Length: 305
Length: 273
Image (tube, rainbow over all chains, first blue to last red):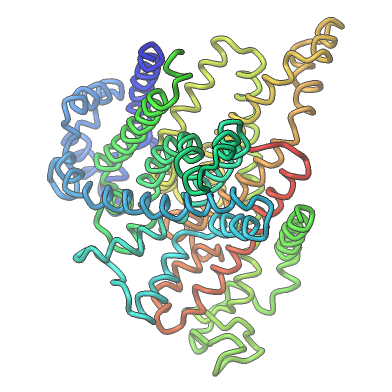
């Protein structure tokens, strides 16, 4: 198991380095960053001032090494717009995005797992097909549109939930539902496939023969085996959700990291943009590493490898 | 059952494709002509609506049905060309990794891992913001980002066929590597890749809509469905139909593509992809 995890950790480290380079290169795509920052009405003098002030007149490799060295120490530079350290800006807003991501994951899991189990128990039935149809519909729903429809329906018509902001905890429910929608189909299908495999296996036949109750067979024996891929995919899905929360934060005016990134992109605040890309990528890498670790602990076959 | 869903999905796609091709013939008005005297006219079935503008008009008095019909062009262009771009990249990487194995495969897996760890929407938004928004930029950006499923699936399937007898026979007959990959490997892994193509096409269309909705996708005044929803957002509390009409169109098209993919998967017995 140790060898497996060390290999994964080395790979993760290499991926981190590459991502560091990509997030730096990304903001240099436009060619001349100083021109983008200065905006359309700037004079040649303004552009020159910005170039020297922000150190953009240095060769690219030096700029990169400088940024990377500081980033490794936790210093991500300062925002052009807020004149605050980027690390502080992101740290202040991360709780909102994390709460949103975890709310979304929780909603996705409590919806997807029971539906997946039901579909597996009645494989091929009308219920199974109905649940499959729900997955297809969930997959086809544009998240930002679903968000607007929920705002009109739950927020305005029924006045059940606040339509923007997170001053109260209820503010997380609607964005959480929308975020969960994107993860539910995959998690549900995975639970269903895993449960179908588990339910047709020998140890379940033995459990049935011993006369155990359906609940005990399904929840104690089959689910434990079916849950493994679900756990690791859930960790990865959380990574996708944090990255995708930018759209939902924009719709619900939640001032999390996604909103910060969106704002920074439209206002050419590149130190923030490259830092958010980097941080979200690092979180994703950490989550996949966690998923590998969980798998190694849960699955004795991997432990031996 | 599966054939029904594939047929239904295929039918929806065929209709949208026809609409996209014949939009100029079908549209009752020019989708760009503004009429500030006729702003936010409700659709025909609501009070105050008329057959002159069956789906009403938008905040600039443009005919909503015409914009919706022309919008099908944007979604189909994005879907088709993104899949072609990402398919070429992903299948090239995947087949190389799967066929050659060894360090080529390690490098391939590393590239896939890097791609997966990059936040998709955020990077796409940044690229479009920096390079400038246009249909071509959106297609290329999404194409350069959405190849990883093509790569993963073509890698696995290539590994499965690589050691089969007919490949060995071709090798023994002195066929070049390029010939083997193009003429022997590719035709035999194409079925699962068709299913991947439907998934990616659906994803590309949804992502374009999301980027345009956030103001960094297809630029106005192009009638992208995502952009129509963004422009209608300020009016949705009083006139919910402005976001319902393009939203339903988007949903139905993506559902159709997913239905086709799901049906094909079972008809072609490709297993999970």
